[in-house]
Image (cartoon, rainbow, N blue to C red; front, top):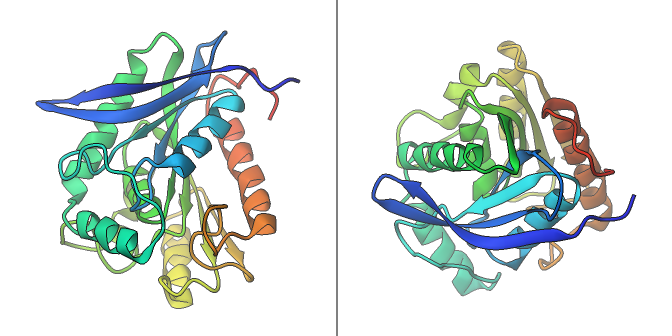
Length: 254
């Protein structure tokens, strides 16, 4: 089937007094469609995250990428220089789990008010810090499918402090698939094994995918760590996850 024409827009997601800027993409016709929340890296809702959102929308979903740094740096987006990494991490270190969950919950409520969205549960996909946030957001009851890419610190910390995010694993109700590069300097292999073990212990519907040739950021074709073969294999797994777990079945060919 042909790739659908997309409608894209910058929208405002209300969360109390906060207005969260978000990038929204969905097929220009048809629907309603299942929704997927795209959770940014430390670099903001930049061109890579918008492209990921577009690819998800082309597969027959409503995709939205909220700015999870809205409280700290409205409109922030960056590239991948050393200075960008330092700035992005500075903002990341000022986030809290409670605020992040509140923002994702508000994004779900916003999606459910759209006529293009089937209000039957959502998927999430997150990269880098967003991979950690996606694991955290998997504890929300409306999240039916989670794709968590190279989320550092899941086994050792939580945003803003407190027990590590991994301790919340029993709260996950949907299916979660985690993707890790075995050459990732930010995520020791023993932490990957910890995540896998805890998911199994609590009988969470899950998969762990490891890529021996990949490091951190292997899905991003703008980074030196990009690994096309791993990225393509992982993307097919993501599409299968969303196709299987989200309802109704997307009308676009994936």
